[in-house]
Image (cartoon, rainbow, N blue to C red; front, side):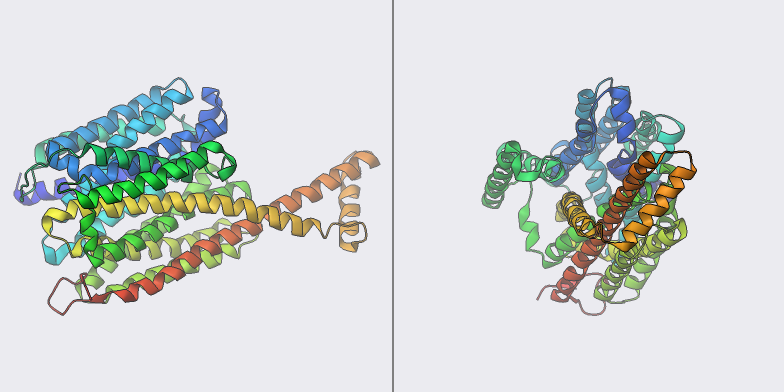
Length: 516
């Protein structure tokens, strides 16, 4: 096999590994009720299947660079793939909910390397002047993984059974592990393995684990009404504060926060946090909106996302070529953010008569917008770093995307609940005995049920229930519209940050932005 073929095969393999890890973030979302019924658990307990994986991911991602250096990149990467694959199989074998949660956590610990180390390998395979191409290729995984997760999960759940959501990883994982064992070499720039920063690892695990749990579980347990949420909030604040102080103090930290001195990485990290909010909240809101209010099946809902995901691949390639031709990354990123805002605005204006075509068109704007943003942001994150710092910069940037997703989901869930209550209150104030529109509708509903064989008393009772059902649906519709507008406003608020950066002079890497 020629060197070029080996390089392309390795590229395809590591991107596949990253996609596999990212799919598993959202693939279980549509299967929670099936898991709950099959394992005899409450839906609240079953949601820990999502939470445990997210906590493990966010803990492990920032230290992947350290672990790869300490254990050897090939050994750590292949070992992580094997762990991810093995615990995927064990998830499908779980016989109770807490066994599934435990295996899911261990699956997430193995999956962390599949994202950050994959990104570092992709960038290593391309010269500096083609980093935008590397960004586009890796961006395919970053964007498509969470997007097709619900589609794949819905299809498997509807036509097979939920354990196959995990079993599907096994043959792919084995193939990826074997290919990486043969093709993957150690980095060209070798560094001496540092001493183990045990305190840093402990503080990171405690701080990030507590923060992730608060974000994932806060809305479910009414935030600070729950004592454990109060305790974990304090723990996260103190733990992360001490972690930052310790990592900046010692010579060989487990997470080298000093790389954030690069203005490129700092700007990219904040914008990646915002893009994480957009990616994960839109993938959460749209399936729930489609199934709960428009009565779409899981498979129909998943298919809504497919056209946008396919067109997004073209958006990734086009944005990479624009960067290579010297088009301002500030212009490209801002264009993508405005496309996402168009998606948010269109979704906020849908009514209960909306069809698949209306949602699909909006999701195309979402797909193109996030795709256009992904390439320059991914390249920007590592553009100002030395080769030895790229793995650490990539890991921090990926962590920001995951945290953005968790923060966005927690915020949107709480916002939906509050806005739904407010809209219901507003609508109920119009339901009075003196309202002629209400009287006319009740009479029409009552006559309908009498015509179906109900007596007058039952017909009137059913008419009132139908009015209440309409109020519930309308208040839900309005709250979803508010939520879509909220994430659009978050993107709008982030746009001015782009103007803190400027391009380097002509002749330098197209995507690199200069420090002031």
